[in-house]
Length: 254
Length: 299
Ligand SMILES: Nc1ncnc2c1ncn2[C@@H]1O[C@H](COP(=O)(O)OP(=O)(O)OP(=O)(O)O)[C@@H](O)[C@H]1O
Ligand SMILES: [Mg+2]
Image (cartoon, rainbow over all chains, first blue to last red; front, side, top):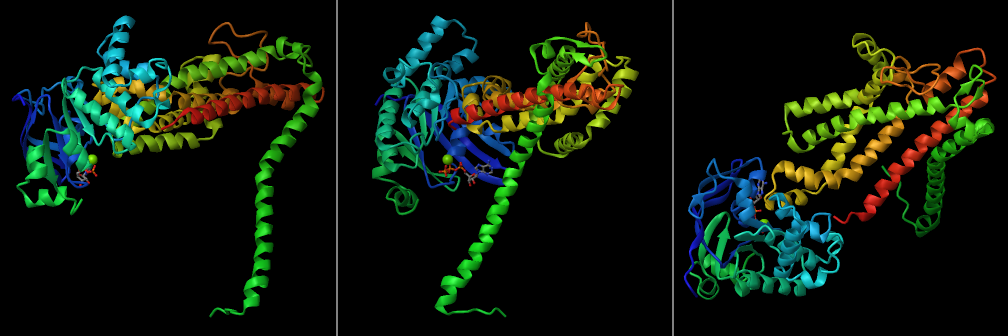
């Protein structure tokens, strides 16, 4: 594998909800154009850490971050960070597919329109490209005007991926993107992620150990807010250093 | 001490029978009460139609009153009510929706929000005649609008404002959080999220509230009695500062004042039919929009 540079560098990073520390003093690097998986038992702070990467935690009034979160060597928690531009560059796909209650086309065109692209021909091209990349084009090209909510669960999730791709992000964050889907749709999305990884950096939170092992290059194991172990997915799954990691991936607790 | 009878017989027959009788009694009572609403509506409609249908005609709704209102139609009266309610809605919807957006999307829980909510609830509980007096004092006299379309519309708008705020707020709050999250994650600002995702999604709910509010307003007498309503105008008003006739007030006046109370009975009921049709029609429209939206929404 060609060495790739760190797109995110997380240094002594913590997040509090009020007085409760959900993420504890984490140090971690995320490599560009790779898939990094975050695993760990429920409530250990995976989502909190993931949502810190595009500052979605800002929406929770009680939350507060300390330490450094460098994106291309710039601390995104600096006062003068343009959060809107950050979220444009670091997109997000959620656990429950959440297309807007508008047409397939409008869903995908949403981001580009926000950035002021108005010309129909340009938008058409972006929408088509994003849907092709999300491997949804063939299924929806004849029903672009149908409601996004009329699609199947797996299709809706790929629509959400297309919506994110349309904003031309460098990173896409996935928070358990397949936990609400059937095995076939899940496999479909896993294949898609491996395809996408060539052009975007992917960080994925998952409860599914096999999924992490199958698709990710790097794995971070978290436990009660702390990063217990981080490294090559192979190493983590075959030769974990930490006892807790081993117990978790062999399914002795979870 | 309870007297528990453990013989088989008692379980099987006696208790069951007693229970069935009691259950049957309450069930029929509930049924009766449940239907009482429908029956009352039916009786009222029948009564009004029976007394008023004879005056109904094309002329009745397109011609002005004639010969001290004993003959002719109620065209200016209908127009007056339409103008009053439209203008009222034009004023109240923007204010109500903006307030609701503030309350639902921007306000932080705390002392301020609580006092604003309290004021809105209190305002909703004020009797409509008080709004009438307030409108008379402030718009008619102090601001010198006179008894006018404008003064009446503003008064009605103030009266219905709490209702529009709370229905709009409910509609906004019913928009799932996941839509907002999705929009923000696309790099939208909060305001863009509200304008492009939240408001369109809430629109059917807001519209339903507005239509039901219009229905309420069009039947109000007290708030316009001192602020806008005239016993007689020769046609439809030519400016905002002219008084208007209005359906509920027209019924009130014909039924209580003047020298032809008995003679105009059918016209009174005819006017009531028009008013009821207008109100029920709007309610029906509101219900249809609501049902359609329920069916459509999949989240
Ligand atoms: N908005 C919030 N306010 C207060 N505490 C919160 C909030 N969101 C999460 N927490 C707490 O922070 C901790 C980490 O939550 P987080 O959602 O990041 O866990 P997770 O690892 O994603 O769990 P899961 O696997 O169940 O999704 C939990 O203890 C949770 O109770
Ligand atoms: Mg989570």
